[in-house]
Image 1: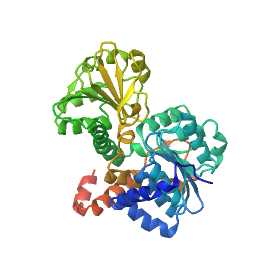
Image 2: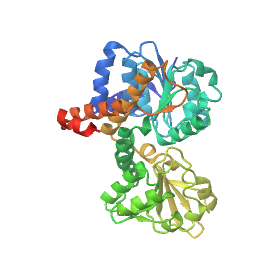
Image 3: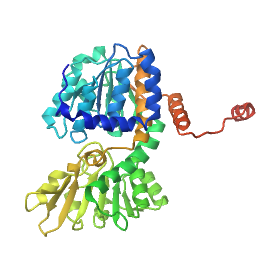
Image 4: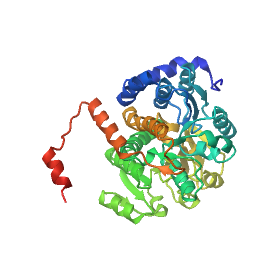
Length: 414
């Protein structure tokens, strides 16, 4: 299969990026060294649909080095970095991805990747799985299973599984303790603000930040905003998460009220229409909107366009300004797509080292247990979580205590 990328001449820049992340991903380096020798995935076809930047490119290379025939496509039009795609293609991995592709091209790339007839898949957001349950369901018979990286994709998988429609085993890597505790909280928390600050070059200190959603990602975004000196308001639909946000020191109120105060807005709910025309109507002049959820549906851009009195325009790279009838201006970052990737490089390297080690081990688990798994949604086994955490601590030079035999006996006595 021949790759479809922007320009192979961009490869040197992408190789530099991949080389940098390799130096800071000790878990993937350990897996690469071990499994490149025994070729655990020898002869298997893998399709990886994920945000295509340096860290994910290295994961694809590690899977390839372990013997797999890897085909990669992007999971978001704005998160693909063309130089990284070129470097990956130049390293022998087939790539179908270009930055800012159209929706038609995006679907075509996924379909082209599936032409390899995969044995295993890694998905991020559920678009790959969705196509396998639709127009490419003829490939399901050969498919062993797959894993899902993000909360939105897991929601879609749970719906399929609960309705008895999931056609193959899937592992919700996103729901693994090591994943949501570190990736969702610390990864999203840092990378979202990296993207916002890089794009706007504005101070966060002293501003009011409205965080929509107080799940693990929302906790991270709110915590980092507080650390940057912001006054943080949280909006929620869950009373338990609402009271948790209050006890964490944040103001909690409905979005209709919070919209009046926000300088920055960050949506991170996984749901649609979190910010709509009723909220735009009361926002401050100069309000900045961003989304840290997987799909560009949390901020209703159609409503925003309907309220404008002149065509929106790009006032600065990745900032689109909408002018209201009273002259107020509302600014949207990254077209309402994932701000940490549309406007930045995604999660910190060390965080994704944990997540991608889990993805690798999920592929290994599916392959080794291929005759035992049912067509349902699984969580990564707890012993693999523990193994990854222990390896990460070891790589960081951090030691922890171990229970003595007497302590083990004490804790397990009747």
